[in-house]
Length: 349
Image (cartoon, rainbow, N blue to C red; front, top):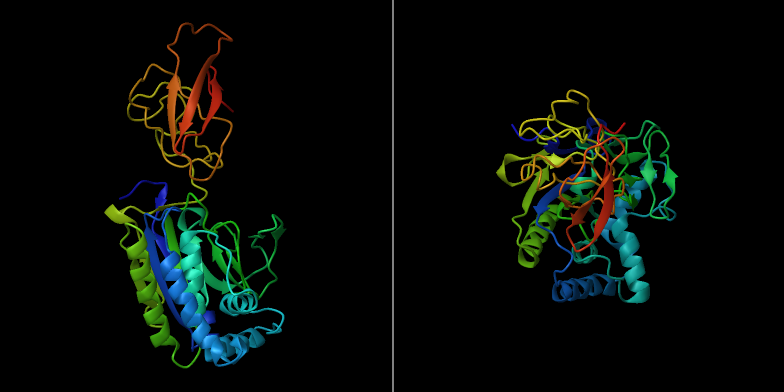
């Protein structure tokens, strides 16, 4: 059994979605070890050339992949010319500007593949999802984080990517992705989802996820895991290497990780278990020096610089433990940044 804060990733389409859209073909790729310093310029250029060839024959609206999504949007009660699938929006922008802005190497690569195949491709930061994740009709309680910073609430009946915490990671199915799970510089594990509904969708999605896997393996030291999702096998379940699951976005403190100022005994903090605490916003990973100096009182920093910070504690030698005495320490972060915090005797409430 893995760590209690680590969960297996599960992704699937709800049975109602499958029943209403039987022509749906979907594929996923799980990849770990992603970094923001990869060079995908050559691959993106080749894929843009393939998009040019497809657009040379006419408008993007005439492509069978785009027409199928327009029909699906109309069945969902959406105006196809007002709400477009992601691949159509990319092709329209590329046709007008003859290029796309660079966001992240993986996003640039998947956007180029989406245009080459005219199939929507979503890239989700796995560490920002409270697994499991399901494509289903919204019930009106989900929250969606827009790139503008605003929080929206999808209407009941809208197709969303909803996780266990009630967050919608995409609105109107393939129309808009959430900023909450968007790929960022610190992203390392991603789930890539491709969906299509045209006549040859199953074969095209299979080729697309194979090409995504090959491109990711060529640019990063990763071993992508592709899978096709069908009505007979609609669920994708996977864990990172070693049988561990992915970290939940809203876990609670396990035994030995309560975060109070009690001395670490090697198994748990005796003074405060079984009190459980929420993981502080932005924390990721355990301190690397807990077992190195048990006499030092440890506290979590009140400041948090980002969602993927890895912390290491350093502290001055303890000189006094009288009431009201303070000691300063420092949490050092991967990437060269740091944040200071103070620790006082006694648990933090």
